[in-house]
Image (cartoon, rainbow, N blue to C red; front, top):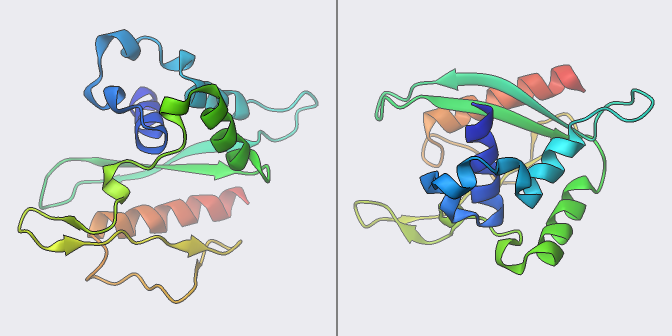
Length: 161
């Protein structure tokens, strides 16, 4: 599960598309991929036992009835202000080919299988992990397992904070 999460992290946020297909040459070297290594390093406690800059927690699992494919939910809680910004800028300096770049799943105006237009929904949470802004999540713009992921992630985040 950890390897799958790390692959998804690098593939979906930093353009490591070859990880989506679990290519043999990269499968055994996940720790050598710069964003993954930075994430793993940030999960280690500080020298005086301080909390790590980032915590990764399993939050739950669901099986959507339309696909019957298990969805595993993981929370990445960034505690250190600026850590993610440093990760993004560092990735762009380290390897231009793998700078911060959301994958195709986050593109606006893409077509679904019926040719209907889909728009990505970006949400913002306040420091209590409640929705902010005018964007509302409704059954029309959220699949059930996404709602479950948000609810479970917010519950675990509240417990950690």
